[in-house]
Length: 124
Image: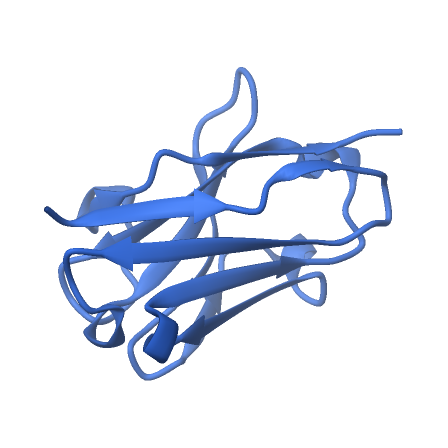
């Protein structure tokens, strides 16, 4: 069974940092791209950032550049999302997902595998 499991979410104060992990089981991550998405209450799910099999990175929003960093450790079958300078508007459930190809996709429908999400809350 192909599975992605997110972890590392929690409560953090504005300006703080958090690192999320996306661990894969049932398949090897080295030939896959992994994208991070988030969904705030009452809002649609949006793309955050993606890293492909060659470690090329796509950031979906200019406001996230310089604050969010994606990386991968193929030996551990894990992709990470380092989040710095967190703001209350970053509060959301964060998901990782993989398309069938090894490259980042422009549409959510191209991501075939999804984790269950991890909650990130930025509040004082």
